[in-house]
Every structure is written in C-alpha cells, then in structure tokens.
Image (cartoon, rainbow over all chains, first blue to last red; front, side, top):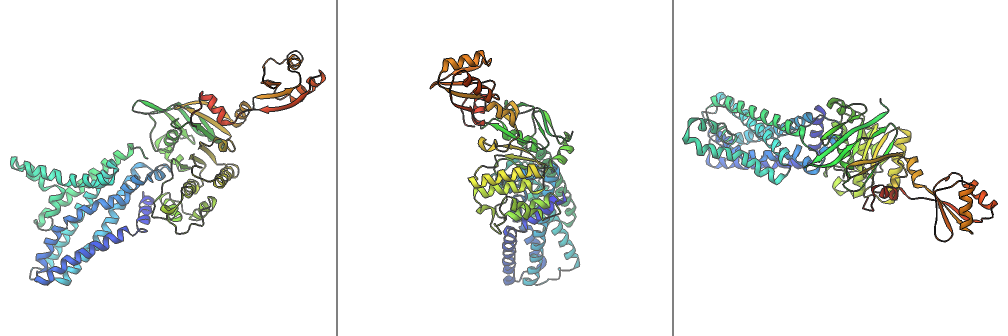
Amino acid sequence: MFNIVKAELYKNTRRPYLYILTAVCAAVITLLNSTFYFNHTQRETAMPSMLSLSYVGLFFIVLFADLVLAEELRLGTLKNTVSFGAARGSIYVGRLISASILYTAYFMILSFVFWGTSCLFMPAGPGYDGQFITNFLLRIVATWTTRLGALSLALFLALILKRNATLIFAFFGAMLLPAGLLLYLSPQGQIFSQLLSMTLIVQSTMVGRTAIENMGVIMLTSAVRFAVFAIAGMLVFRRQEIN
Amino acid sequence: MEDLILNTDHLTKTYNGVSVVDGVTLSIRRGDIYGLVGKNGAGKTTLMRMVAGLCPPSTGHFLLFGQGTAAGLRAARSRTGCMIEAPQFFPYLSASENLHYYCIQRGIPDKACIPEALKQVELDYTGNKKFRQFSLGMKQRLGLALAVLAKPDFLILDEPINGLDPEGIAKVRKLLLFLSREKQTTILISSHILSELSQIATQYGFLHNGKLLKEESAEQVWQNCQNRLVLKVNDVPRAAAVLEQQLGCREFEVGENNTIELTEQLDKTANINQTLLKNGVVVNEMYSAGKDVETYFLELIGGNADV
C-alpha cells in the first residue's frame, strides 16, 4: 500500500493540475481577504465568517477524487495495477490515503495563505487573543476533517459511477439532497433536526461560527463518514470488474 | 508443479446468462509460447482478463504458478506481465515517467529496468514526449515495455502487434523469441495475424464461441496442415493402379490436369517416386501441399468468418 501511495504522489507532483488549483485558490483567498482591508473589519470578526464561507471548497473535493481514482477509471489504467497482483483493498485504500495527503497539503497551504493574508489585511481587535487562536485552529482542524469525510464520499461515488460528469452531479446531490430532505422533515421531529445538523453541508457551513464544544461532534461525524465510505468503497472495488 | 505455469479447469465466464468463456480447460507449460486463436468474441480476451485478475470467473478455477488461492494468485501475478486490450497510460507523463510510476507502485527498486525495457521495445528515443503524443504503434510498444518491465516469468499478451508496422511486428517477434529462448519466459499470446503467430507459437489453443475446440502443439498443427502429396503424372490410371496395388495406398483422389492427391504415406515420397518410375509412370511434379494455420482454423470451426 505504501508503494501505491508513493506512486500516486510521484504522478501527481509531475503534473501542473494541483499547482494551478492551489495557486488559483490562494489568489482567490488573498483577493477576498484584501476586501476587508478597506472596511477595516477586525480579524476575529472576519475570520470565522470566511471559514464558514469556505464550504464552497467542498466542491473542489471531486477534483481530488479525480486525481487518484476517477481519472484512472476513465483512462483504463487501473488494469495495469490490478493485473500485477496488488490487493484490491490496498489499491483502494492507497488511493484514499494519497488523495487525503494531497488534499491535506492543499488545505494546509490555503490555510496558511488564509491566516497570513488575514493578518496582512485586517487589524487585530481585542478579541484576537490566545483563546481565539486556539479555538480557530480547532475549527480549521474540524473543517479539514469534514473535507476528508467528503473526500471518502467522492472517491466512493467515483468508483461506482466511473464518469466524471455524473460524478460531479452525484457528489453535489449526495451533499445537498439529504440536507434538503432533512430540512423539509425537521418540523416533524427533533430527530430530523439533529440529523440535519450532522450532514456534511450543514457542518461545513456552521464550523466557523458554532460553539467550540460542537467541534468534537463534527470531527467524530467526519471520521465515521470517512470510515463508512472507505469500507463501502473497498467492498465495491473488491468485486468490480476492471476495464 | 512449477512446470505448469497456467492450468485452467472448466473456466467459465457468463454475462447476462451468455457464456463468453465456456468450460475452458487448458494447460500452459514452462517455456511454451501459447497462441490463443479465435474469432472476434471467441472469448480470448475474457480468458486472459480472468487470469490477470481483472474479472472473476463465474465458475471453474485456475492455477497460476500452482497457486489458486486469492493470496497465492496475487503473488503469482507479481511474476506475470500483462498487456490486455489497448495499452493505457497517463497521457500527461512521458514513457519513462509512466514506467517510473509503475516501478514505484510495484516496488521495483532497480530503476535501471526502465531504460532497459524502453530499449527492448525501441522507445528509448522518446525523451520527454508525452504519452498523448504517441502514435498507435508507440503506445502498443509502451504496453509491451510495461509487460516486460519486472522481468516476468509469464507474459500475457492480447493482440500485441495491433497497430504495428511490418518492421515493428518483426521486432516484437524477435523480442518475444528472445524472451522465450534466452529468459525462459512463458508466453500466452493472442493475435488476429495467424501467419505471424505461426512463426513463434509452440502450442496452440483454438477457441470458438467460448469453448476450447482443440489444443495442439505447433508440430501437430504443422503436420495437420501439410496433409497432401500432389503428384502430376503422365498416366493417371496406371499411377493409381501402382499406388493401390504396389504401395498399398487407399487414401488418394484423382484431380484435374493429371494430378493425384495422396493423403497417406506423406513421408515416403522417394519410395513413391521410385516405384512409379519403375512401373513406367513419369512423375512430372511432386510436392507437399497444405494449408496455413488460418485455413486450418477456419476448417476447424467450420466457417470462413473473420478470425
């Protein structure tokens, strides 16, 4: 499995795709943060709002699923790996780990850019203290875990759909439809509201502003989401015919 | 046990109730170049895909290097090089980078095998040229390079000469013969170009509608193909009488233009010629006539469809 991860990292660092994506996202973050410079918004006010807005980044998750798996399914290169005798489970998990590493690198760079440009363009108010920084770091970690949960879902969808166009719609659907349905059902009972708060899209939007005590639930839900879709993906991939 | 590289036992693959491979039992021994012959849709590729682990058999089983368990097959497949259907690689990487990727993935520590494999298929000149810029023949050759990259003991090649020019075909033939003779690599190969296959195969398996019709050695196929002795004589009735009475021949036919086609005693041409001459029959021409593997196969399946 280690070799599969190493090979994926080798391949993806030799193409401009990831560098361009990171550069464009970093530029957008810098541009957005620079707007706060003109209205003198304080860091402790703007940063949580920006973090909640970062749920838009969820939609880039599909690109990482594409980098390590969807593209291979589309190109038909997986047969080169499977026919050499690599265990199916290792192939799938290896790709999930590779995507997680690549996403983590991308996420860390953007987090540094976000924090750095926040410090550059926004003045620190009285609330920007050690407690705020600790809490905000925890929120960033929670955001990262929601993304990894989403990545596991995207990889699973890539495996069962095999087509990029369908994958994008399915991923959006998998994020938005359960939330929409639970939102519709929430007046019917408390359980629906609780479930709604555990959906990927709701957790991603509230991570910047919700009480810090909720970070544990967000991280736990994300870990469960990651594990469930990883296991489901392994089970599907074990039986899947490779073309 | 290790002498049997691949041994399938009633291997069957069914899609929607239709058997694409139907109870195939075949054996490939160490050192064989096993030519799998069959029409489009005969089940050649599906059979190879099952052995390569790309699709599971519906029923039946097979042993690869004597291994039949999931873990054993995985280990056995690491000694196998495959090129099944059109070779596929990452279009944005060069030939060398693509092979480097698979070297890392397969845990091959010695990266010297990359230039060596590229040299074997004559792609060592491609440099930084990306796979997407490759011609069909170059793609095919890179597929072969990947198959031989880890110096496998067993090669599975599905139509490896598709898209190659005559020079490329000759080079692939030379490479396969080199691997077979010098490296003792066992090869399972399918090709539509039977004239080409007949130049290297030591064993044949004839597949039709998913069933294995026959397994024969190259010698047996050659003998079955070279099955007539044609005599052009000046006096057909007298020659027929000599053949029947003095040489004891029963299996011959009188053809047009004073010819007689003999289907027995094919190895006694000198004796036949001498006896006929002694009895006043002038033999103007005497030659072995036969058919190529393609004709033999078409006769075997009872048709003339696209092979």
